[in-house]
Length: 392
Image 1 (spheres, rainbow, N blue to C red):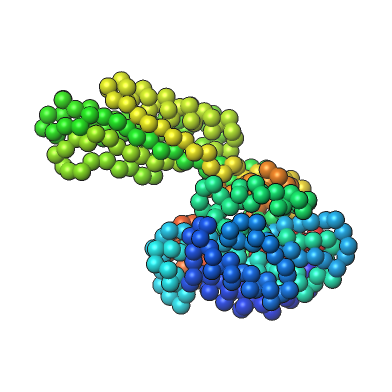
Image 2 (cartoon, rainbow, N blue to C red):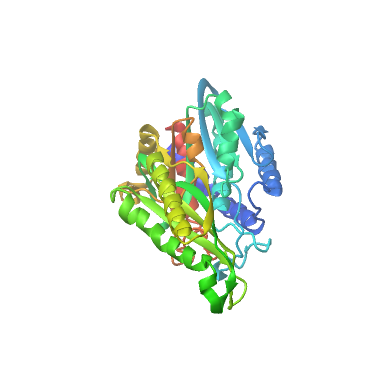
């Protein structure tokens, strides 16, 4: 079966690349993927794979195998793009036509890959035992996450999914590499918003004001002590302030300053500690100076925690197809996040990385970089591996 799948993946390789380039040229933001959804549905229609639309965008293809069984396995791809102005000469032939919107995280590759996997499985459906659900999910890049919304519909639960698998391009690994691990693989991704409230005034008479810019700088510095002084050093945690706004002129002390940040953890207990410390630091700094604050913490995606059986199956299958030298069992988690975690709260599942980096393709930039790119050889690994999981 592996050789059959490999031959079909090779046969459709050029088509897969063309699909990815088409999707790359026509990106759409989270939960606005209307044309992308229409394109996916048209491709499923060509394959005579019925689909349903539990959400406003995205869809789930339902491929019934020729061997009667209650087994149900889901394969997931995310379809949305980012609000980024794309750059990069390596992509001149297929750079985004939607200015300010771009697939700079690899979701175009995920979608193209699953469409080809669907084509391969449709040709082999007589040999498939049970049902394959092809999940084309919207809104991975934006809270609350399409994965959360889809699981809340109960659509997958009603179909009694036995296992679910998801994939991601990886600029951390060269093309041809597969990397994953059982247990914690990716971090939870929560966001917080802060308003530091002071008292405005003239820059020359700062003693009459309560300067929220100074208080904000003290807060930013103190936040760094959460990881270094409050959390067990063996426990992964990242707290980052990514945006700050305040002031209107060089000689005016403003009334307030606003800050936005993210917290990444691998356990609910650590996240609770981060929330507690953030507000305690903020309260202490502002009120000691006579100011005040507003604090809002939005819980994002949970940590991606791979089921041991399913992660081992991915590693085992990858070694069969690629050989031991091209398979990495990770020892540490990645502190980026993924709403695939919501599926894993409902079903056994595994998420894994497939290398997409090379100098030739200028694809060594990190996720969300305006020059992010994917080496086409990603599909030489991703397509046969994902299709093979169904038969494994």
